[in-house]
Length: 64
Image (cartoon, rainbow, N blue to C red):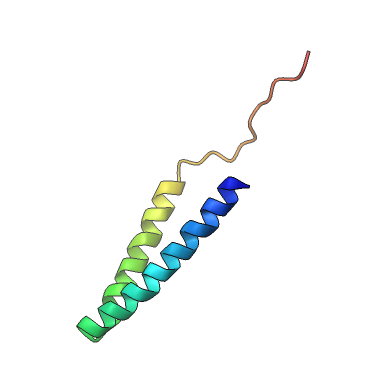
């Protein structure tokens, strides 16, 4: 339950920062291009970080 709450909290904080930063960068540059590039970069980085994840089930020892 704690991990679930942490994931939701970090998602909401990231959503707030992303929306705020997107608006700020649009006001400064007059375009959303920089935010699109940042989003693509973060997506690629997330994919690279998740590549080594092994989805095979964990072998558990049986009780004696």
